[in-house]
Each structure stands twice: as structure tokens, then as C-alpha cells.
Image 1: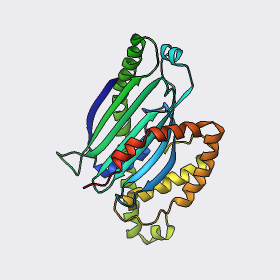
Image 2 (image 1 turned 180 degrees about the horizontal axis):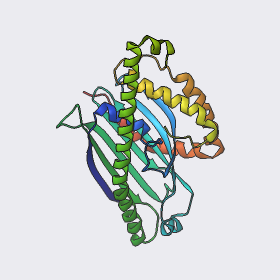
Image 3 (image 1 turned 135 degrees about the vertical axis):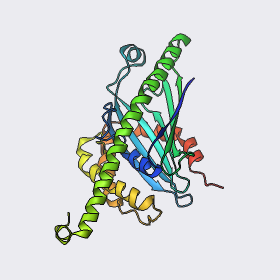
Image 4 (image 1 turned 30 degrees about the horizontal axis):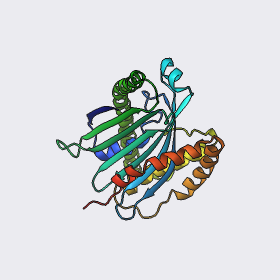
Length: 198
Length: 81
């Protein structure tokens, strides 16, 4: 098993980050073209804890290099199963994901957490990410090691892109909210716009 | 928001996603959520999606993933003391 771990900070409040998280793989993010689809399988609010639990299915374009798909078998797309937990009282978003494709051969389990930064709880958010990668396929240890190592390296490469992409979404989201607020303000000030009901 | 893996579900998915996002930012985060006003849209989307998942044989893979995910639910859904 190999472990990938990192954490980073966003200059946005936890509320903004937690809202934008739902738009992370949308058209505002130009850095994740490999994510083809994101479907919601179920969504419930727990009556005891107030935690919002969401189950999603994420469809990605297969991006493993030839030598990996030759060993593990090829497919055009790969599927990821994700459950997320939003605790609005504790201000914590937890996302847990695992691979569904090739799961007999490799296990990739990732946990990501968004919480307010202790240095500036109302303005900054910490993102921490941890992934455990285990090659399960029988055969030479050397091949298992290579597959695990490749996957960890891919996580490292994607971590930077992931942050850049999410920054784009956060910026667009803040602009959209500001425009919406401005429109509401104008509407309240102007009888003509009120009539128009934009 | 993102597309659905089944293009025939895209239209209803988009409506549901927009409804959810509004509910999340305006009710849920503010602690004022009472009823789930997006449920009728979710039901429509789910009906479309379920069929697509079954047709593609993905429904069984999801069942397996759910079984593997029990620990995460136990860990992240537990009440705070």
C-alpha cells in the first residue's frame, strides 16, 4: 500500500467553498476535462445529526497509460463511487471516494476534508486530502509496486491541477453571487426593474 | 453543473441540480431547511438514472461499492458528543 497526502488553503470562506464544491466538475472548471459526468444517486439529511449525506457516481475518461491498461485490462471510462457528509454545525465537508472500475485489481480510497482555517475561520478554508492505494492483483511484487507508484505520481500531478481548477470555480461563483446581489439591490431601488421581474 | 452519464437524463438532472444548489445555499447552510422542496425533481431524475444504470449493468457495481462503504458511513455519520 502507498499513501498520498497533502493539504492546501483556499482564500474563501467555508460556506463559499462548500457551495462551490457541488460545482467543482462543472463547466467553470477547465482543469478537469477527464470528468465526463457526475450523477447523484441519493441524498438525505440525517434527522439526528443534521448531516447531509450524498451518494454520487463520477464518470471519468480513462487516463491510465498503455502499459497499465495492458496489465490491468482496458476500458474507455472509469467509475468512482463517492459519499459525502456535510455537517453544517461543525462546518465540515468530508468526501470519501473509491474506484469501482478494476476494483478487483487495485483499490484507491480517498478522503478529502474541507474545514475553516484556524488562522482565519471566516475567510479561509483548509482542504486536506489522503489517498490509500493498494494493488491487489496477483503476481510479481515488482509489478504491484510499479502500479502503486504510478498511481501515487498521478495523484501528485492532479493535486496541483485540482487546486487550480477549483480556484476557477470559486472565482466564478463569487462573481455570480455578486451579480445576483447587485441585481436584487437594483431591483429593490428601481420600480421599473421590479416590474420587469428579472 | 456537470452532465449525466446518460444524456437522456441531462435535462431533468440540470433542473434538479439547480434546485438543490439553491436549497443548499439558501436553506441548508442557514439552518432553515424544513422540507425537501427538490424531492419531486429528484424523483424524476432518479427514475431516469436508475433505468440508465440498469441498462449499462452499473447497478450491480454500485451495490458492491455501497457494501464496501459501510465503514465510512459509520465514521462520518456518528453523532457528536
